[in-house]
Image (spheres, rainbow, N blue to C red):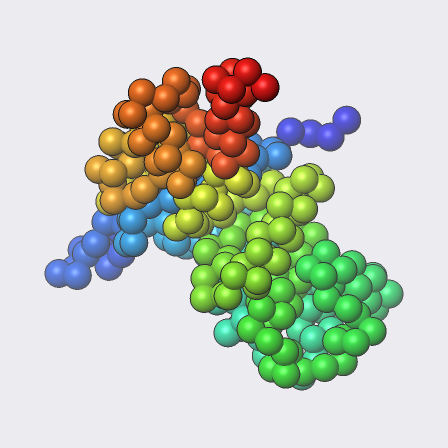
Length: 290
């Protein structure tokens, strides 16, 4: 039986340049758990601490106070195998294609597995597997320079490089930033497939519609603090709270609220297009007698 996994933040705080005139509190007393199988969306206004938080999840930053526990082990503990734990947590930065550097796509994707000390055969297998996961044709693209590809393809190469290490947790910081609609949909489809295949996902996003379609849980940050945490339904019904922290709600939730204000008999917690459509069709059939 597979052991249940989690990443737990306990009273996490982070201060940049502490003890100086430039001291800035980025995170203040955050307690939050990423459970095995979660798709956790991190949302909040620009500068609220989202990127700082995700960099703690795989040990790129150390807390000023508090702990990050990976399956019960303190990621920053004195006796922990920090390198081993970090390899289980894949972090994809915003605009990850800027970090591509190898002469071919295959070599770039193979960089992480090589550093893991894997055999040439296993590395090749992982490169092929990761390219398939991000919908890149190995035979056509493996020997190409990544810099000959489109922006969306480069983004997928960068994600494949993280996937090739086969992490248990995948952390994505605004994975669709700067992409056209087609590229954005491709990336979100890949992330959805990975989650449905068993990967635990944490995604920073500014799009509440994307969050509504993908997330199982939502954490709302505001000025470095955890303002709210819950299921998308629990979070998006709190429209006033979301407005207070400078965020909107999914389009379906806004439309639902507007229709309710006009007397349409709808639940107050609808937040996806599909469920709003289903309720409106049912009401239409009741009214029309069809």
